[in-house]
Amino acid sequence: MNSHYILQWLPSYLVPFVSLSYPTPPPVNPDSFHHSAYYKTGVLDGCLIITCIAVMAVLRDIVRIFVMEPFARTGNKNDLINGNGHAVHANGDSKPKSVMSARDARKIHRSVLRFAEQGWSAIYYTLQWSFGFYVHRNLPTQALNPTELWSNYPHIPLAGPLKFYYLTQTAFYIHQVLILNAEARRKDHVQMMTHHVLTIFLMVMSYFCNFTRIGCLIMVLMDWNDIFLPVAKMFRYIGLYTLCDITFTWFLISWFVARHVLFVIVIKSAWFDGPRLISVGWVPELGHYYSERTYNTFVYLLVALQVIQIVWFSMICRIAWRVISGQGASDDRSDDER
Image (tube, rainbow, N blue to C red; front, side, top):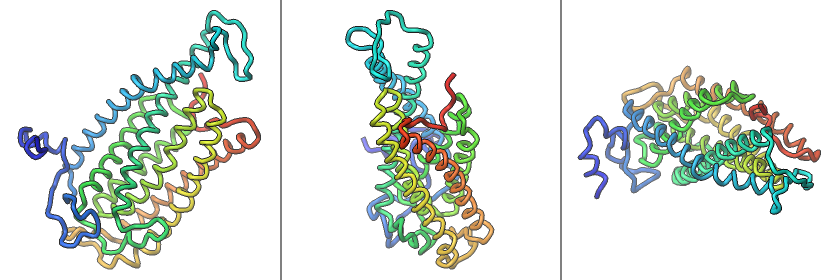
């Protein structure tokens, strides 16, 4: 059955929760997504964000409880118990052990929970980065030459895939804020909360001020290296320390390139190219939301985001030093052992 007819069966007040709102005719000569439906932006887009948050919460629990936790328990069992039923330690030694201690049981339980949480993160970032990369590839923008982020501003209306990508990403970060406040606090709780709040504000601001192209590019850059950290942690929690160190090294390299090279190029372009290439000022009725005050706020928040990432990178470098010195990778940002 066509989705259009399915929506007709729903009460009108539910339609914004399950579909993109504000459909509009496509531009005469679109420079991207030539065969997609196009949409305007508006407050009803928040309805779909609410649905996405609920769906993510359900999917997260399904993946954790029914996929990752059973797999992690198998992995921990194989790591701690050998074929003869003897406990196997990190140094490869074993000794008879008929009953697992309460301390070991708690340790395994923590590892299982953390493995499951990182498994969900790895799956989400892989899927969402792939979708974001698809959106980015269909836009006339380049990370190394980002002037097209500002040319022909404002870039409205929005193609369906771009709008859906933006709304799902916003939903994810709101969902992350809820999780941060619901679960045990980590060492970097303040930095994480500040990062997520800044990100949400930037996404909402860029969405309604029609700076979505820079938003898409930044999200693709950020999500790329976020795939590898949870994978490295998963290897660590099931005792695959060599794979953990290799994956973490790749994460370190990808973080530096994406967040401290390419992202800085984008910030530089926002600082210098934006004011030079955006010729029209504040004309909201035409979708122009450029003014010196709003634009400077936008750029300063990007700089603040970079400062937070520099703090995180210093933590990552400390972990990298432990890898180089043979101590193995462990995450300084994780919560303390209890």
